[in-house]
Image (cartoon, rainbow, N blue to C red):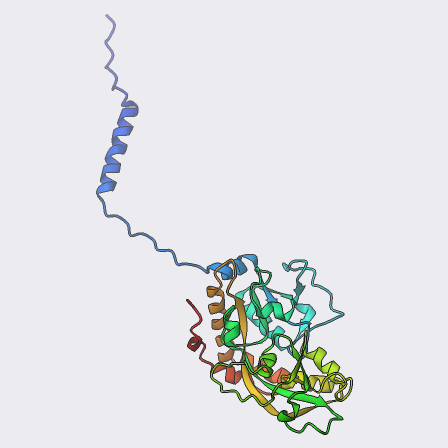
Length: 325
């Protein structure tokens, strides 16, 4: 008789694995629930777009020495993220340009530059064609209706220049009713219209009923003044350094007296941006305050103007403007 074989152990099959899995799930469900991970929010709005794109597009002037100047013989950089309609930083020089270059560096992005008309910049509604204006823009309540302002990066003054042959205008009041050139849309124009308001300052309007002649830039106005005493203009109202640069370049002009008022110059951001602009302007304020603190702005001011005009801007209380909703 054949020897009987030992009965084999039944195969547990897939049901055993399912049962074991169910037990493990039940045990895990009875254990402590792990605490949720809270993500740190990153930059938002237009600031996030700038960091993702890798470029900061800055509006400035092409002919506003010593603040900003397009170098005519400098070619566009080859290795760049700047769009074809934007210029690379090597094509510009000047105080505002160096400020913009440092801001872009501290953001960790490349600086790109555009030169729209000044009246377009100060009126807002940029349609996101550029990110920020760093172009010696003075803070005024009127501009604050359309723009946010950073901590000022420098301060300035408004002075009059006349032709060097003029011997009849000895004080600002002598220019009442006369032709005075200014850049259109600038704070100088508002001063002549007796509508200028500068935060923290009381302004005395010394010139009555002038004939205001608007120009695209202060430089163009100074060139017209240089055509002759009272030929096209009787005076130009601008900042002292722009006038001084014009005289050094050979224009026959002279300064008339001291400053008519002082002002504060800041970076500006469009309130009507399609992306939230507040994180950007707050970050710009942080960077500019850092640049005040480490002496960068004092050094640049002394380099271009021979004096530290930035020290007064560092003391400006930006929170007092109560800009944000």
